[in-house]
Image (cartoon, rainbow over the protein chains, first blue to last red):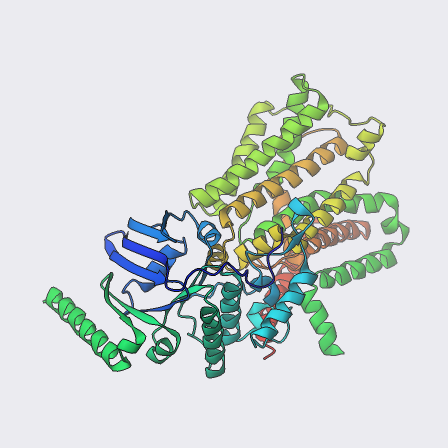
Length: 272
Length: 325
C-alpha cells in the first residue's frame, strides 16, 4: 500500500453542495459546558472562518470534527450521511485532515518523516519497511512546489524555526486532505513571509474546489483574505453566519467587543 | 574537520561507546595479555554481556517511548522456569518453550495494558510485576533449584544452538539486536515508536495508535528477555529461584544509557544498548583479569553511567540548538 505523492483528484462535486453539516453538537468537560448546540454548514470548495474569543469553543469544535473528542450530543453529516468518528483515523478515512494549534510535529523525526507521519510509504507488504528514498524525493519535490524552505528534508523538526515547523504541519495536512481541511490557528508563530506562503497554499487548495476548509484565526485581516464566509462562536453557539463580502472587519470587531463586554458584565455580576 | 567529527559523534551515538569499548579492550589486552584475550576470559565477558544485552536491546524501545520496564530482568528468569515446569508436567519440549514464550508475552501485554488503560506509570506497573514474578517463582519452586534443564549438556545441533555452545547466547543477542534495530529505524512501527515518545499528543493527533504501539513494545521486551532467558538457562543447566531480576535490569538500563539513550523519550539506539552491555562485560572481565577486586567494578560502573548520561543530555541539547536556518 503506498500513499499518493500528490493529493488525489476526486471527481468534481458541484460547487455549493453541502459537504459537512453539523446539527446541535454539544460537548461538556465535567461541569463546564463548552459547546451548547453548534449548527454549521460547509459547502464544497468553501473556506469558512471561525471567529470567537478564547474559550468560546472553537478548538473544541475542531477536535470533535477531526475525531479527537467524541461529541456529547448532536449530529455530524458528511455528504448528507450521518457519521460518528471513533478516532482521528476514522475521521481521516472520511478525508478529514487537521492542523492543530499545538503543532503536531515530532521534534526528533526528520522533515520528510514528519511530512509522511500517518501516511508513510512502505515496502515489503505487512513488514511495512519504510521507503525512505521515495519519501525523501517526494518530500523535496512537494516542498519545492509549495515554496517551503527547509535546510534539508533530513533535518530534524527540532532544528527548524517555529514558522518552518508550522509550514511543514500545514503542508502535511494539505497533502493528505481529500475532502475537508481543518486549520486551527495555522498562522500563529509565523513570520510575514511564512504567513504569505500558508495563505497562498490554502487559497490554492480552496480554488481547486477539491477540498473544503475550516480555519480558526484571531487575525481578522488574515481571515478576510482567506475566507469566503465567517461564523462567530460565542458561548458555545454560532451567533453570526455571514459571507465575507457582506461584513467588514469593523462590524466583526464591534460584535466581538460587545460579546466581550457582556461576558465581563456577567462575570462581574456573578462575583458581586 | 573537527565539526564533521563532532557531528558524526552527535548523530551516531553508538560511536562513543564503541570507541571506549575498543580502548578498554586494548588497555586490558595490553595489561593482561592472553589472560584477557583468551577464550575463558572472553566467554566470561560475554556471559555478562549476553543477559544484560538481551534485556537492554528491548528496554531501549520503551525508553524511546518514554516508558520503562523494570520487570524485564525477572521475565528473563521467569521464562525458563515456565519452560521447566511445563516440560516436567509432560509437555513436549518445543511446546513447553512456546507456552513459556506466550506466557511472557502475556506478562508484557499486562504490563502494557495496565500502563495505558489504567494510566499507571510503567515504572510502578513493572516494579509490581517484578515482585509478582519473583514471588511466583519462589512459591512454585518451593525454593528448590530447578535441574536438569532440558537440552542442557546435550550435543545435538538444536541443543548447541539453544545455549550449550558457549557463544550461542551472545549470537542470539546479536541477531535480536539487528532485528530490533531494523524495526526501530527502518519500519513504520519504528517511526510510530519515535513519534509516540517524542510528542505523545502530536503523534495521537497525526493518527498514530499510541496505546497499541506502547502495549506491543512491552510485549516485545518480554519476548526478547524470555527467549534469551531460556537460552541462558540451558547454557548454565540449573535454575536458582533466589536470583533477583533487578540485578539484571539495573545493568541493562545502565547499558542503554552508556549506549547513548537518554531517558527523555524520542531518542535511542538499539545497537548502542548492545554496545553498552559489551562495554560493561569487558569492564567487569578486564578488571577481574588485571586483579582489581570485583567490588571496585561497581564504582567504575557508576562513574561510567554518570559520564555517559551527562554526555547524552549535552548531545541532545547540541542537536536542538544547531538550528541551521
